[in-house]
Image (cartoon, rainbow, N blue to C red):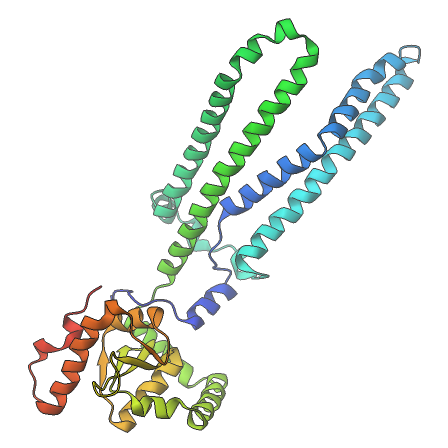
Length: 361
């Protein structure tokens, strides 16, 4: 089985999204929900306290009522108060949960993601999942959250221990203010801790998602061949060819001294003439189908093509068209240019001198 070393293509990512397979962090949703709930509670704290006080004092006003009547009034008032206090929190929590998911993955509906799969019911596959890296990380996150929350409560208790011990001397008037201060600090520290965990988990889930969708070179080639027969892709390619032929791309390729490729996804054109340029100049760069077109134009123009995955990807990320290459690429690009010169001077050059065997960032 071929090793999956290639980054997923746009088509692979689109297909995964259609199946409901996207990078999504539950911790982001949890952190957003927690912060929202705490914010709502703190914003409406005065109203919550006054409502609860009214409910607690209500029996004192009903002592002369018949028991059945008093019970009816008490039950109705309690339910009304509960509804008034809880419904805003439920509504905000629901909206926050949806918003946190949409922000992460965008609007998405996939029936396949909620369709049960029989192979997932297998005891063997279930046993394997217990020891999966993803589940291990989930377990560690749960332990970390419990440990952090316990530590924060302990720190808060130690910090305010003298004040707590002095409550008996201060009286009832000190209880709620002190508890309010402690609760606000605890909420603030917990929110910060959960945000840090959520940020870590978000990037972890993204990296795991990309890793899971990685492709072998055979899969990339197969997808490319299949896309060649797709009418929609053919139409896109015709339009792209038209734009390339009418635009500056062919001239940029012809001007290049060499094309560095990765071998399917990336193509980078470089030009160097010691009489004209102090450093190699990036003439053109492209990815996916555009990269294939650049390579085809280079072959038609007789421009050398060198397959060097790390160098191609490095230049793609670090350099722009019509700009000189960054200093860190001078040495590997010099090897490439020497190789190009060697092709002109000695076509039967020793393959061990090929620069693709020497550049490993």
